[in-house]
Length: 317
Ligand code: G3I
Image 1 (tube, helix red, strand yellow):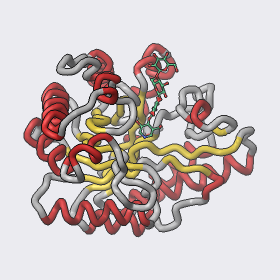
Image 2: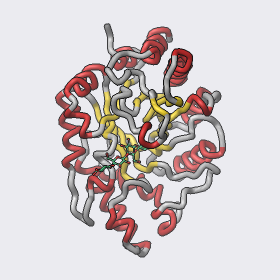
Image 3: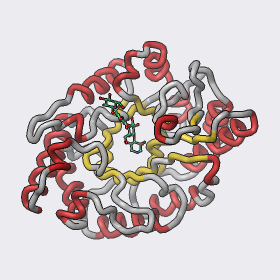
Image 4: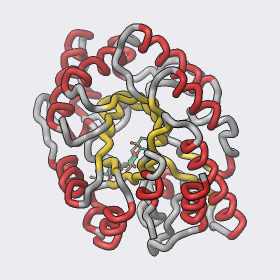
């Protein structure tokens, strides 16, 4: 049978999964990842704490491991992420920096990392989670020190370091139309008008059954496409209160199918990445105690109803 990525490719899309470095030693898991998916995203391996653990000293071990795994299995790699408020190295968060110092640090980080992965990473989450829920800029280290212009600077530095990589802004809770996605809509519109290189908007899509389906996802994807950027669903998972039961798994399957269909309905929605593909390895149980079962494969790497629903959406459209 065709893989999810093969089915997605019939529509000109990709289907990918994140992977964290330690998971590559799980042979059965790594084998299925390499067979079923067309792209992968390092769950942690390219983050700032991993790539620049000391100021000006770069360590590409973790990211390189994923790139070489991906190459061996013919997967493309989404880079994640150049700039985020979380998982920054201690030297950066504990320092006090003038604007000039921090600007130079950020420019060097982006330049070195993007250059290292030039030709190996097809898209970068340049800036991750830079907006608050109310649609104001998140008060992260960069905003506090540099003001909002750091976002355009980051995009320009990334473009200069790899003119071919697609450059994304990426966030969660932006799947529906609302204050936070409106803020990205306004920002991307202005960046485009100013000639700043931005190619895509990443909707993480960490969904949860108890919060309801983002009902205007299709219209939201469409409005970003209409701005002239690609859209990608970058970190899809759909969690539930444990224990899972038949009804919850059926609802989850329905949601996976609807998300897949929403992407297929808009030409500029270029692909879907699940944040890990199986309940065996997932960030959710440790972050949201009592929740989980969020992925289309179960802990034994067997298909769940969600897998069948994705497949059906990819073959029906
Ligand atoms: O590296 C240390 C290790 O030395 C230590 O022994 C161990 C003990 O807890 O922790 C390890 O660090 C963990 C790290 O992943 C690497 O495994 C952190 O505790 C853990 O919090 C961290 O979680 C990651 C999380 O980002 C951090 O916010 C998840 O694996 C990763 O999947 C998750 O990914 C994020 C995206 O980047 C952005 N969007 C949301 C998404 C889910 O939170």
